[in-house]
Structure formats: C-alpha cells, structure tokens
Length: 298
Length: 132
Image (cartoon, chains in turn yellow, orange):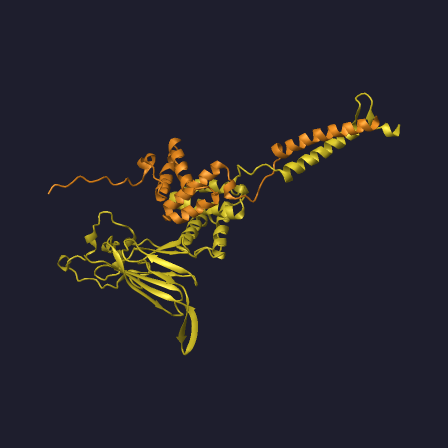
C-alpha cells in the first residue's frame, strides 16, 4: 500500500510523477531556451547596447543636436539609452571617457567633444571634459563669399583707399574679406624636413597666394594608413602667419598632405626619428616638415 | 503495473513541462541581451541612428567620420544602405529626414534622380550662351 500512495486509481496517473515530470520539463525547457537556443537577438532597444554602442549612440545624438538644436528630441533619444537615469550625466561621462582614452587626436574628435559639451553643460551636468576644447570664435574669413570671383583676391588699388594701408601684421587683417581662399591651382613650393625637439613630428603648412601673401581658410587634408584622414584649416593661428596651419604626426607613420586645387605631386612625409643637438647634447626626437603651397600665376 | 503508471505519468509531466518551459523561455521571458552591438538594434532604431549620423554630417561636414559611424551597423555595403534608406524615406514622405539623408547620400556619391529635388544646393544648370 505504501508503494501505491502516489497512485490515483481513478485516473491511472501518479500525481507525484506527473508534477515531478512537469518540473523537470520546465527546467529542461528553460535551459534549452535560455542557454542552448535562446531567441535570436533582434529588435534590440538602445538601452541594451554595450558601452561602446552606447557611446556611439550618444555621440550621434550630440552631433545631431549640434546641427538642429532640438533639445526635446535629443532628450528623448537619450532617454532610450537611460530610461530612468540622468541622461545629461551620461553625456558628460561619455565626453570624459573620450578625453581619457585619447579620442581627441583629430579635428573630428574635437568636434565631437565640443558637441557633447554643448549638449550637457547647459543642462547642468559636468565632467572632466569641461572647457577643454572651447568652441572657437567664428572668424570672418571662414565664411565663403559666394559672389567672389577669382580676381577678388587681388588687393584693391591704393588709390581707392583714402587711408594709409594697414600693417600686414595687425589682427584686423583676418576680417578682410579679400582673404577668401582663392580657387586657383596650387603647386608644392617647398618640402623640407627639420629636426627640432621643441616641435617634434609636426607638419607646418603654409599656403601663399600669387602675391606671396598667406591665405587663411584653406582646408589642408592629411591622409595616413591608407584611409585615415584629417582636415584642418590655415589661418587659425594668425599669430604665426595668416596662411599657416600645423598638424602633429604620430611617430612611425607616413602622411600625405594635400589642399584643394593642388596640381603638383602630393607631398608624402614620414614621422621618422631624428637626432638634434641641444646645448651640446644629442636628443632624439621626431622629424618635422615645412610644406609650402604656392598659388600658380597666370 | 505501478511502475508503468509512474513512468507514464512522469513522461506526460515532462512533455507538459517541456512545452511550458519552451513557451516561457521563448515567448514570455525570452533572454534579454544587455551588451548588444549597434547591428542588433531594431530596424527603426537603426534608422534613427542613421538619421542622427546624417545630421551630424551636416554639422561637421566630415564624410569620413560619418561613414565610420555607420560601420558598426554591419551593413554589407554602407553606401547601398544609405541610398536605400534615403529612397525609402522619400517614398514614405518622411519629410523631416529627407534633406539630411539626401545630403549624406550625395556625399557618398549616391545621389539618384529621385533625390535631386531634395538637395539643399541645387545642381547648377548650364548657363545660356552669352552673345557678345
């Protein structure tokens, strides 16, 4: 009788065995569906992204906001990442992490940091990236004048100007509209290396017009590792020269340097080690380069 | 006889339990991934991400960076994807997204005739000859 205590004669089922079987079956079913053959990952929501994916997403939100300045939209997009947390702190954290991990090498990286900061700081958040890359004041020469013609870069005749000409070194020259980048063709006028421990691995680019005046606002593109590239502009360091721009190389890499309208060969430089003598001591550093582009005459 | 009933009950229980377990594990409480890549995003979220990248391109005009930001979506061909999505937005009259997507498509060389009228800067038309 004791061996039949789990049997119910009316149905012919052992309830104990039935319940045990259900328990075993559910366990096996869950192991199979959660471990062996889980649902295919799809329709993932932004909050489920990995930290790298979330960083990409936050950067995209920040750049989008920098373009459209739609704060509610940016907020809603960030809420999809952090449904119940302070989204602005998340943006500040992403900016800080990017600075800490060295994602501030290219102009693009810096624009990203600025866009992130532009998003989180007005909302009261703060982080270690605060103020590291302030947005530069717009310069007049950065705005192209659509109606300008190639001849507009010629200096106006002195007889048209009743006042004496301004010294070329005054900062006011940066706002002279005739400094719009010329559209003519350029040639490589100088390519020379130098070894200076105070400026290691720097490409110093200078762009001159037909009259030998420095031309600000010219985009200079450097390319390395085949598909890596960065663009920077002349004229952002007017204290050096109006047509001056520089770029810091990573030791060991080769870079090609180009500007729009370059008709001669594209110069390629190598950030190779060199040795300089300073105060009688030999110092190892990285080769730097002077590269000048000259607008063609005629 | 007793053993047969016991085993039979156990088998029935296992089958019912398995069915229940599979239903729970796949339908009611499926695995929720929390370390996903952008490629696993829902299609709608991927589209929104792409639009954000396109708007970011409008901001920084860096097409290389824009394409790099789309790479984690793991599309077979990013350029095809941009073109296809842009044309779909046009077909759906998804007006707010069209201009930025058209600009992105143009930047990667995928400006198709259907996109032409949405360009922010129309292509210059040939000027009529000037009589001396």
